[in-house]
Amino acid sequence: MAELSAIGPAVLVHGVFDRLCQFARTALDAEKALDVEKPVGDDGDRAPLRTMDEARTDAFFDLLLTGDACVHGQDATEGIRAHVQVTVPATTPAGISDAAGDLSGYGPADPGTLRDIAGRTGIWDRVLTDPVSGGVIGVDTYRPTTEMCRFLRVRDEHCRFPGCRMAPWRSDIDHTIDAALGGATVHTNLAHLCRRHHVLKHQTTWSVTQLDSGKLKWLSPTGRAYLDTPAPMLRFIPDPDLDPDPEPDPPPF
Image (cartoon, rainbow, N blue to C red; front, side, top):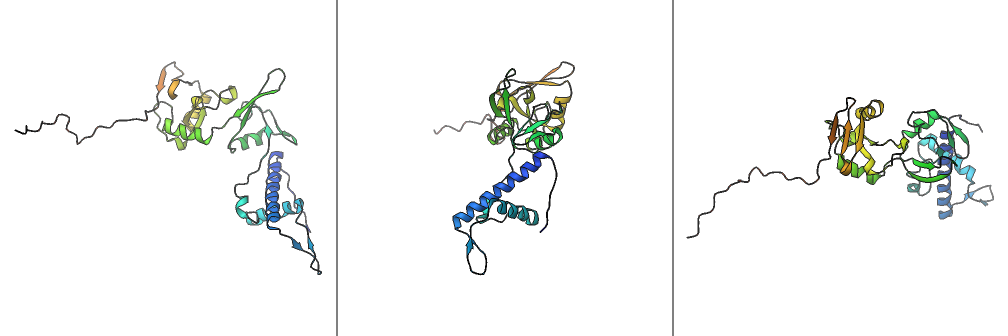
């Protein structure tokens, strides 16, 4: 027997352990459903199913050696992702501060790791707290949902900075009012910006306000205003083969 150990950021270690636990539970559930037992000894006696620790260990080696966990009913393991709960000030992922976060079930989590996973995580929940008591008064989602993304791609069609036509799939979805400053994750506070103009919005004195129907009013550092309006969905295109003033047909008499 031998031992293999690793030391790393607490968030990542807890995530690895959570994923191993999910694989192990899925494997044990599949074995129970198939009534799988393992024979032991020369007398043919059969032992109970694997323990949770054994299943975790098997999943650990399967994932490292083959890149996949071997489980009865393999489809059940597809899409398994690690889950950890981290509470972090909104200013930390935004790079405004270096305040540490709190990893549920462990303790402090360093800001560098949190910023790294923030850029690769699909959805964050924003927790609104009472400024006096610190109690939770509301929770919403920081990242737009799939439905919101589809809506915004159709509405925006390109980067919404004046004159830019970068395609939406090559652009970021930006909160018009920064989420760290209380901006909600709703379509009336979201718009596509290419990476260049996304950075320009946050790191220069350009400012933007979202008006009704997705219109964006940009204000330049010199005070000049620019209005960017989404293209209408209903468009009429002239038919070049249609004679605008055709000659009338001769009378039938």
